[in-house]
Length: 393
Image (cartoon, rainbow, N blue to C red; front, side, top):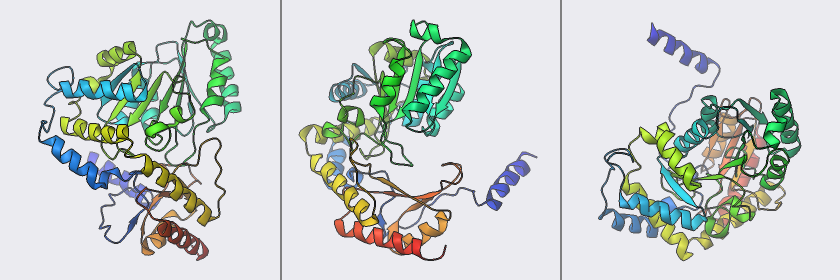
């Protein structure tokens, strides 16, 4: 019976053109404008050589959870260095950004608290919020400070908690991304933080910022959007992931020491998972070495130069407000599979993004720029997109 039910569900998705499949395919000859390896560090020979040398001195796997046999001096060393690099009071490693977001949002908001989140936050935040103990969870329109004001005032009035919030008798959480992975928009952190400050005092207002697509791209030495905006002390928690611009895997939560201890005691994805493999920790440290030496700065500059070149070639305004556009460039279309196929035939590895990953009516082909891309490739990519859009879809 179950197999028939599962098959029927897959067939329904197939009929609607929404069935997901793995996209393993040879990419020889295709220019990568799809992956999240923004700084091209995953393929950089100097990083690969440093990682290969570091692996000679570490175990492959951790052998257990952090609270049993999976902890090591290497994990503690990495956390101390990451906290220092990002100017955070403490740090805690996770296996993935998904695990970290679920952990943060299932454990930190207490009964009676309120959580408000941007409508476009990552699925991992949504999953954490579904299991949250918060009294109320609400969303506001993407990056819209005025709507945050409206939603926050409304939910506090609805719960009769306006006075409690202002007096600090309940916590109010704001969950955001620094760069939104499907749209490439940069968070209006300052304006959103000002709204939150009007409704809850310091110590009872908490901002969680997922820097997955901001770290490595913005800030001093790639420290992220919060650093670039000189607002690194505004969020209570920053999440840094290593699977995008760092070219590795895993994640680290940057937070106060008491929050770190609380997560160690209550975050089930951390407690009941095998710890991040030492070989992955070693790779992260190799990238951190390169960042600390300033070896990656030129790659960050090149990334933004290539992004600008693509914007100009596509005929889009390149506006720094106040930060330059992210290297994520969506091309909206009602026929994303057709458009992606045509751009691929022109020699570029791109992907169609459809519902339910993005809202209905906002299907797109997502372009990602990398430091290894050339000026000529950006011009050719724009020409391929324009040609694909000009043909009948």
